[in-house]
Image (cartoon, rainbow, N blue to C red):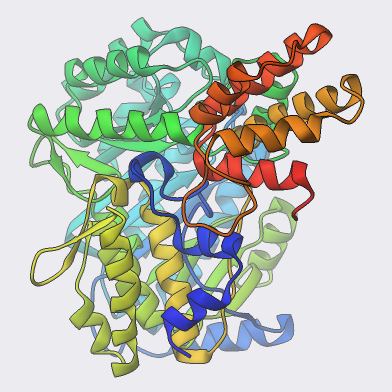
Length: 559
């Protein structure tokens, strides 16, 4: 069975979910919502009693080739928890921090004598978290000196320190730059004081800009900031102000990230409880993405990959590029992830067992996973999509059967997500926005071609969109209660007036606006129904056609 036959065998909902839909606005509506945070295929978990022996074997042998490599070092402490963040592990405590850095240095020292590491080069180091800049100056100096001593850094290495604006003060910066940090990545997220305070950021706009000015005045590092679009209360006007202030800040580059609202997260709970304004829907985020991309291009920023931009030659974003390639990544620290020689790793997220393993001379695995046999293809596809263009011929070079991918690439070209230039498929603006979905679906297609298995991955990363469907469902339930069962007839008439029954298996769904207009055209007086009917019409106007179709099916009993 080829991909086209697979497509035809799926339900309409599965087709939409995995392959998207044909729509006049692919930027906003090519897929119902974002599927996963990071695209990938699952590996096989190694039995815990085998993990140490496998790791020792890997580390005991010199590298087969001296290629580009990275190291990721995790600092699992934060002074505060930002509502949108899924990486918070521990609050800060000086005694706990001291003991943790002791263990982390011991882990680095153990790796330093292993042939797999000492006989190779590390080209990029990323100290992430958590909030690494929250470390005391003393512990930061200890860690940075251990990195210099234990890791075989290439002459042109990039050493990134991730953190927050609040920690950008002279006593910290002097330690950073005296001990090898040459890139600083700060999570500004927004310059707007109210937006920042909404999600737990400490400093106001004036402080953020002043600290960035001080950082740049040292002239010792590539300085980049993260900005997030879609934050609660953030609209296009505020987003433009954020970009204007980015231009004025003097930094060397930026990352533009889409907000993920996870089901059950603190952020989603705060929004649902009415303590925060709603986060932008995926549709609105698509407009913010388009505006941001075009704004940076118009102002001379160079695009390094889908999310990363530079405005000076200082910013290379080397780690971010290598992290999405086949380059090995050596993990250190509680909660660190990595991948080396066919295995993916996750180190223990709880500090106490992490430290206990290190003291016993063991790698502190929470899990060691044997990567999929398809991993070399996966890494190639991920890297190409991340760079904004896919060369089918380089993928076919792995296995001739992968030529079948042309079917899905041509489908996405017809739908405005890809554009073939004679050599490769370039991601259109819409394709760039939906890049993670396209990558994940391509990997699933590869898995199907090579193994016959079609496993559709899903993570609940767009909770802000489910609110629209819930609003309409609640309005419909109220209508049914108050209209003594005639609500279904209303729905049927609305469907007829907008082009047919919503459960019909057709490629296009009725549009939200048509449905809302149909409601207005109804001749029946609504009486007490006016308020719920108005809410339903408003909810429909905010829905994409695909979302509306799904809700209509639920209400009509066509699940």
